[in-house]
Image (cartoon, rainbow over all chains, first blue to last red; front, side, top):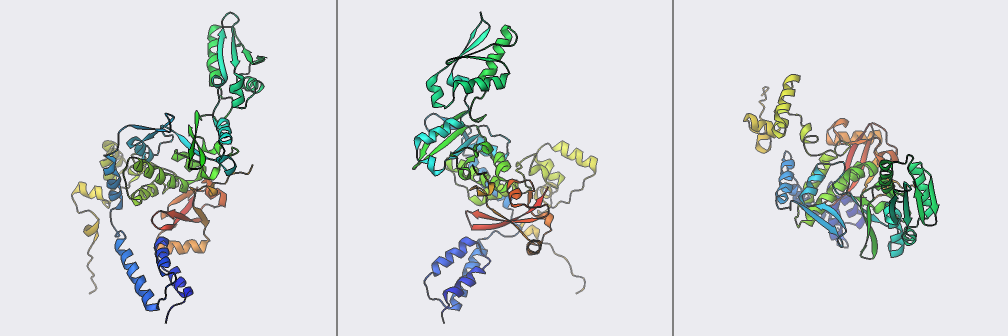
Length: 380
Length: 78
């Protein structure tokens, strides 16, 4: 008596196994005639194998993860910069980058975004370049030159028409932006802008020049450079500097596929689950780029524990290790004296439940065979 | 121009608000208190979009490299 397709599907749907495994069974059984006992036998075998492969309860997964990431870490380069393309944007990689990820720094040392474009823009180099110009922060130095005239005590800005054309900005717009930012009158003669400081002093003049140089006339503040690269068929923009929230508003940018390497920024803009995924992706990419392979489960555990409280916290003194319940475990990590002193002042009690505390006091640790406790039943 | 929603992003997995009964079932299944669940802030962009309230339990269906899909639960806190 063979089972019908529907009956097989129903049995499989009710299995308490990961989707990946259930799907594998489903694919294997596709189009095969099978009896109920046979199906039960197959499921029994799979469940047994799965239980066997599964990590044991009370296993010290954290220590295993730490060592599994730590050992390949010793083989990583201490300082590497990678040039994305031809001597263009550099990104921190290797060990410094891995440290940056687990430290959950607010701003990474080299923030960068990977901007993917909507289908209308992604396959056209000129349109992609247009988006790039719109995003890149443009200062006056990109458009022309600044000179100071000491005799007249004014600043002469000569703008280059072709550079302005490329960046789609007009002399009037530049003049407006300057007026807005400095609050001073701007004199416009063709492609030349002339400004004077409030007081006709040498110091004021130089200060104004510095100020003008810093003004962002167009584009996003903080995006210092944008590089276009062709990946497979698509044009992808890489930026130096990161501003995820603002970039998503731009025409031509595909917000669903645009990323940054700043994990905290992802956490703020896309939520904690996205931050968890970002940690996993960034860590795996960093390790893979160095030719190291670490099982993704270890990295997933790290990402899970970093995001467990709803915001990204670091592995370290101000995060996971600093929040341990045990005084001795915290003292064993960093700033020993402070922890013991504070605990003494507060009158803290250590329950000696963890590994570190028990090693310190010389007791068996509560893991593996050490986790089994015998209790006498008095009634028998 | 349409406003971007965080839950459309490829990094964001599906978040579902559980009904109180469903939430209780989860707690019984794992034998834990609500406070022992992992947390998510109410002002988390995705929690805000789906309109989660403090005390709700969210079911998150993650894409997992090892198990294809895995379910995860988070308690909404403020």
